Amino acid sequence: MPVSATGSSLNNPRPGPPLWLLAELTYRCPLQCPYCSNPLDFAETRDELDTESWFRVLREAREMGAAQLGFSGGEPLVRPDLPELIAEARRLGYYTNLITSGIGLTEAKVAQFREAGLDHIQVSFQASDPELNDAVAGSKKAFRNKLAMARAVHEAGYPMVLNFVIHRHNIHQMDDIIRLCEELGADFVELATCQYYGWAFENREGLMPSADQLATAETKVNAHRERLAAAGSAMKLIFVTPDYYEERPKACMNGWGSLFLTVAPDGTALPCHSARILPIEFPSVRDQSVSSIWYDSPGFNRYRGDAWMPEPCRSCDEKDKDFGGCRCQAYLLTGDADNADPVCGKSPHHDRVLAARRAADHATAPLAELTYRNARNSRVFAKA
Ligand code: FES
Image (cartoon, rainbow, N blue to C red; front, side, top):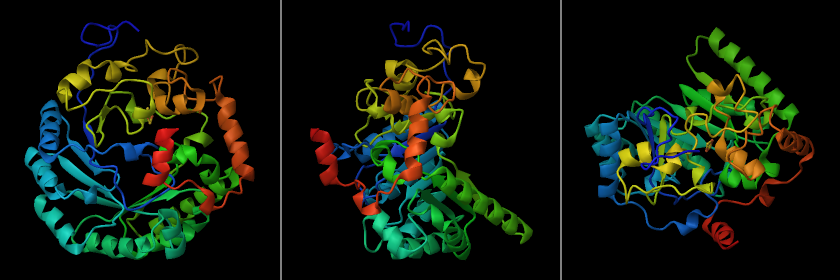
């Protein structure tokens, strides 16, 4: 692809600003979920951005037009400067969202965040009961803490937003999960079937539900939606099916370098949370302004527009809708991020997705055999 001296693609219009900033404050996390989207070698990242650097990133992105800010990780609560970061984000005029496991949260912290101006808190659960929840999370007290903190978040006046990552070990719990959400007074529930990046890709065979499991779960969710609507409940259920059961790819990130900017704990700037797996050199906010990263860096320009697309994407009449799908998925499944996302039925590599579906029909791996996301396992991946 022709690239100018500043790195901008010659045939692409200058993109709009990054509207959504994801601040991955840390890779540290007290939980060990085997579907974490963090990089496998996360334990190698020790040098986190300091408070002042985050202030600068928030300021520069806001000056460019960023409006939504997600604090995530790892577990963002392990950063002692989180209240300061929230307060600064509020001062700059962001709409702020804390994406948390709830572990490490206290009623005092919820009040502190409220005071600092945090707009929204999303608490994640692993299952509807303590045994399975704690087995997936790799932590003995996780469920009890999460319940208490979900209630504290609600009592502080926040909308109750819950997230469950769904996979073959908890997909049978759909009725119980939805009942738990009702008990907690949830407003929005994201039932997000696992997508296969990071640790989830490593554990794909042990996590991916079968087509039958998925169809049963979706039928149940639809029945609950009808029941809730008939009862006048405002609770919204969002069921996200895995890409691997689609025939057309998603418009990942709404297009590469189009709306989303992720800044990783060490300052690496990425067009999506998974992109550091790609054989692309991404810039760091330690060395460059957010504006020059967004508009001029080769990494952010790499997949803008359609000049990079090979067939079948290049001549596809849906390319303006899906942008060829997900670059990270293309890389993970084919070894070349330029390829069409193999989720697409037109991709010459679609057979890899079909093979994963067939394997899911017969998978038997127990939960305990999954590779849990922890520093010990991460160091093994880093050495490999
Ligand atoms: Fe990276 Fe889709 S997750 S482009």
